[in-house]
Length: 188
Image 1: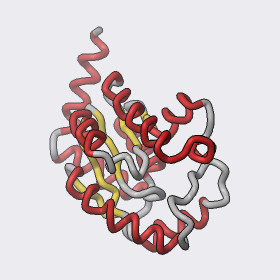
Image 2 (image 1 turned 180 degrees about the vertical axis):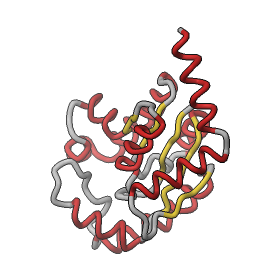
Image 3 (image 1 turned 90 degrees about the vertical axis):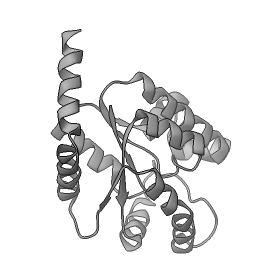
Image 4 (image 1 turned 180 degrees about the horizontal axis):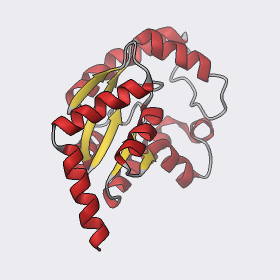
């Protein structure tokens, strides 16, 4: 059982994933970190040296490796849901939570993060706002169709979003399932 966070880049998946894993007392996995470990370099460098196609190939490998992990919270890359095979892998792995984040929030975070070394490059040479709107229009239907449930992050702190996810997991009986799995795993 995995709680898998999906959504566009800069939607808060890694931050919220870490908070949720602490609340559930289960490990946290970031697929971008898995890719960086396997590649031996930051995602940004991997894309600059080997291109987006190589990155997507490694992303699929990282998603497949989730099958070997036990109960955990997973933050995926924003494009993890592009390939149908990836969506199927994720659906088999656990519960998919879509962090629906307003465009202005995403754009502000991307602009702020553009100066950081680890952030991946833009997809195109377009203006960042135009590129983001274009890519979002393609991906939103994929996020929505893949998600088991959606959390709107608008005007909410990361703590509040984490609480919203936890409450949904509690109401759906998933927190109970996680606790049972953790007990079973401790026996072995």
